[in-house]
Image (cartoon, rainbow, N blue to C red; front, side, top):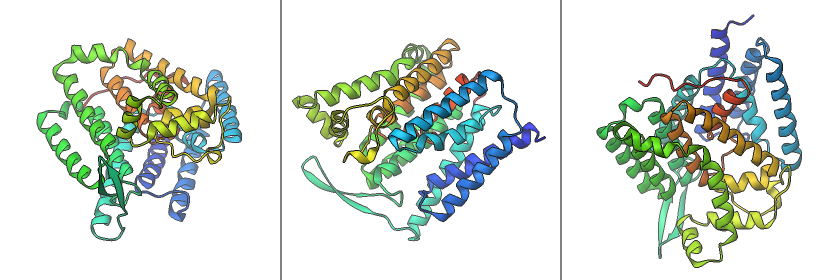
Length: 362
């Protein structure tokens, strides 16, 4: 029988490999990525088959599998099944170890991609973009899209601030903000640029004005539902001049959400191939592609998880939830557990009956 330490090592190794591969820009079209994916699946399988599940845990897992298969059948999206593989292996794994693994994998892949791009081993793709009355040249820095480069950095900053909040001082914030600005001069990705600044502000205020942050984080459990409702309202009223101006600021995200919602929603979701839309909003994406049932369950899971952390007064975790939920408003990665890390918290909290304490900051 595999000891817990060996099982933990198997899972952490599997998670690191797949997160690094994804962060480096590899996907299913790459033989290297496919090899890493299958090896990581074997590692997780070896961990899971030596674990004992409670009866209620087994029933929850079976229910989730049925729902995910229905979503795959109707929505033709494999993202949830992909995420499930890395969620089912989290039993008895500390949440901070999971997040540290993601931070190391994302950080190393981010730096590696910048280095190979600088050395000319991977070419940058330049995009001519019209904004505010003139054209700008945006570089993807080898990430495939300028937005992906900036959002990847935002996620690294968010994970770092969560795990090492005691190191978040004025100097740290300045250094991160400077690099964020340098990166922005290449990508011109406004949304992630400002979100990174917002992340720094919130975590810094949590240290110097904890009572203010406490009042804000008390509403964390409502954030995702509020953003879902806001997405629908903006999409339905897009003909209003003020919302059209907002749509320009959000580079067409509201317009694309409006198109997807005009195609209607269903109980179990619809395939993305059915509409000519680029999704850059996770909430319109789950409404259309995941369906009403999955959307309700996801909103409830987040609400329940955030509520539990509110009762425990886990301000740091709640800031993390708020920031990530806002990031998802401008990105379409809700179903991807490597990006939407709140799924790790919800799975451990609601499926494994785990209590996710904040742990010690370093």
